[in-house]
Image (cartoon, rainbow, N blue to C red; front, side, top):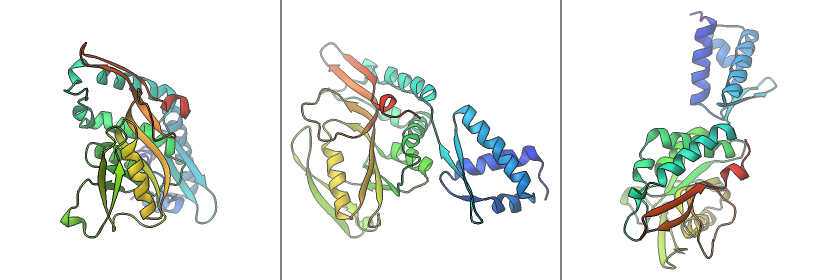
Length: 275
């Protein structure tokens, strides 16, 4: 079946977006559309230009007989800043305050559009990095972790607080909570991650960073390596931060339970990442 150029461009774009960071040979597209490689190359040039102009991402050409193209998500600051500002406004709503100074974020983490945008922005910072796995801890960080992983085309590994029969043999470690200083436990199935993996840790909220440090300790049990840390929201007024290098989209700078006020501002993402 012969495809018109407009049909090729639509289908090609859809395929590339569904397979980020995956090498797609030109022969694959040539056979898929019954077209010459020269025509495919011209089509890909159009797709690349459009992706970059619209802030969707970019295409990387890999030369050689076994070469092809790879799509990488890239979000510019011009696109990221309005979303981060909107996120700050959402979180600053005083109705989110819960007893004890906690914030209700479940609705945000349950909104597919918000989570997907946040996932694209975080993934953009790590699109060029060698990452094999995205790791998070159950349960609230799971939607964000999957959103990031889908843009990086890698699996998600979920660390749990307790053992599940369906997980099979597990590795269990104890860690100290950064905020409460209590000893807690986290568990990960031995089958969930290969040795020597490069791991991006993603979480919804970080106070002192005790949970993140626990996940870093878990990596050691798998002889694996930390590729980065990214969180949706970080708390600012922490006496002792256990984690230094990380990306955050939003910073919770002050919570006044008595006055029912939440002060929120942009996290360090816009300063650290200039896509």
